[in-house]
Length: 118
Image (cartoon, rainbow, N blue to C red; front, top):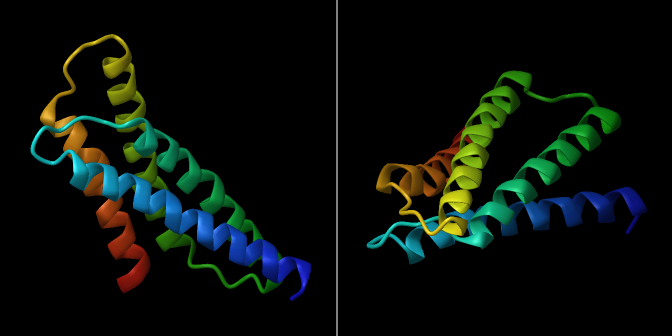
């Protein structure tokens, strides 16, 4: 396996793990919504690995659907902001609003759907 193929596979793997942390954390706390530390980490992992995957795609063949990537990036930024705000509230022992907690997992799920169906 070439080094670039290994890097690509590693980034895809970590990207999926980040998505699993976001949606899994959401489902685990669905009845008593909060934002878990792993959701916060998952959002950052999604951002960094997503940027890496786009960079590799641009380097290799340059066929990237910029509209799709732009929309996914905007949705991910919303997830990341909600996760950061939620974690700050948890750190201050403040309640995390249900809408904020559900937006982290719900928007992550929407982002997965965009990746699969577009």
